[in-house]
Every structure is written in C-alpha cells, then in structure tokens.
Length: 77
Image (tube, rainbow, N blue to C red; front, side, top):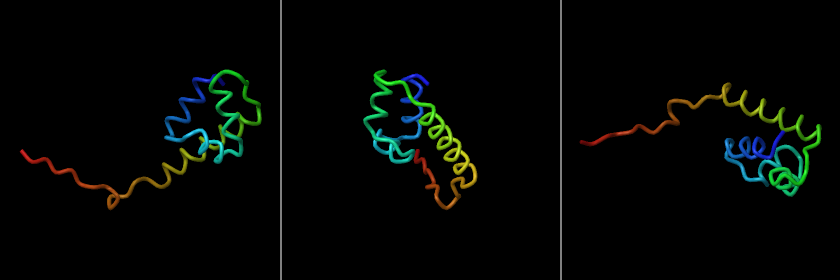
C-alpha cells in the first residue's frame, strides 16, 4: 500500500487520521507516518484496513438512504 492509496481511502470515507485510527485500532501518528512515506504499513494494518473498508461498504449497501432521509430539491424559475 502506498501513501497515496491510504490517503485516498481515508479521504474518500471523509475521515480524519484520528477517526480512521480509532476505527481500526491504531494511533493517528502511525497513519500520518504511512501517508508521509516514513513508514511502510504492516501486514496487520493492511488486513485491518481492508476488513474495515469491506464492512463499511457492505453496511452502506445494506442500509441505503431511505426516502424519508432525502430532502426534496425545489427549483424556482
């Protein structure tokens, strides 16, 4: 995993380093060091991140946005 890929994953989910770290059980500094290219992620980190991404995406498809959660858009000419 490259620093760019990790940053891309984190930003696509709209998370800060601290939020992602809390989700997968690592310190924010570890994620920062990977994103800056100072550390190579461990296999354990990659497995936990991969599992979290899969679970999060699966939950998003299981619990789609309900119609009541959508605010109608009204366009006035």
